[in-house]
Image 1 (tube, rainbow, N blue to C red):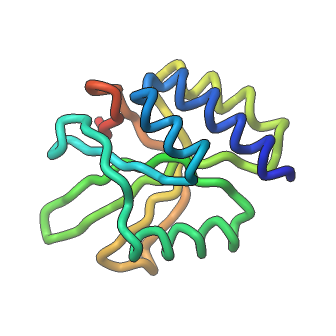
Image 2: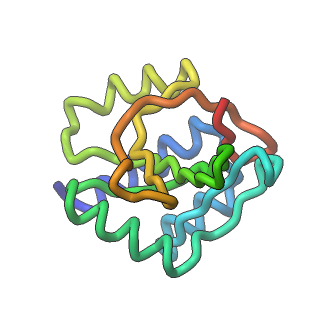
Amino acid sequence: MNLEKMKMEARKRMKILGIHEPTIAQFIEEGKISFSGKSYLGANYWINEERKKAIEIIEKENNILVYYAIEQKYMGDITMLYLFYISPYEEDWEMDYQSIVENYQYTYGLNETDPFLSEFGEIKFKNMFGGLVKQ
């Protein structure tokens, strides 16, 4: 799959998701992935180098393009990073749009506490002040 085509698809989705315009531009122009979460009240922050390296491995292993993330902290000191991504399979994109409109999205749940427990799955989310939070 063409990386540029996947980036343009990511731009479309980010606009539909209502992500803050400068955050979209930073991803498209500079490749910066942002995250948000409830504890940040929807504010977008860039991922750090450690997270960036983990995401690059996931992208390579799964042939996907990650464009946004939601951080969620759970009891027991567990931190999850839910990665929004573009699949290389264009035939799935229409179904992804339908999910986005209903505030659901298939993501990669990166378990930062125990990476072995990371997995693909669907989450419910909402927009909060130009960022996304998990519901």
